[in-house]
Image (cartoon, rainbow, N blue to C red):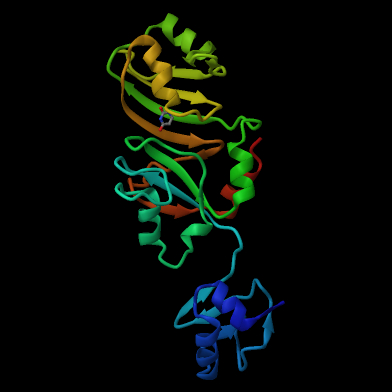
Length: 239
Ligand code: URA
């Protein structure tokens, strides 16, 4: 159980001081019951009604963004636009400093990016111990061939002493310039570096899958959705 004024503050409805006024005016309901005093205790999961809207407190929230090109995967940057700038614009009530990006996409990469305030899960899924599969749709300027495909899949030195783990490539066009690649790591510029083995430049890179989560085809660049309970479970059951 939680004091109602504290819960209103956690829900970003009102500061504890403002809560008193709202309660005095009879504007707050918890599970359909009018709240009459700021020290009343309600369940942390109570449905709070205020000003025609309903709110339920969730400690952890999970969002999926279709990251647009031109934005840095960072919380803040003195000169560039960041994905968090988009996030705050869409969700002004959240406290950005509590949120983490589940991995980073390059400035020119688009696609699936998870944003959450669940720090433990973020650390777990990004840890090299867990081999979460990530799939990218890639366009390259120089075609690959079956033998290069196999070499990349088997593992490539992307730096001295850094050999990539086995990956899977699915070629999508006859010209062999478009494919999906699934990797289990998340090294800096990894996909670009892997294709550079063939002297190919990546001209378009889009993350379409993270673990079992798929980028919805109708989610436009810059759009964000909050994950459903089922999707959160999929994320938590990654290993
Ligand atoms: N690999 C890259 O090269 N860039 C990304 O943004 C993600 C994976």
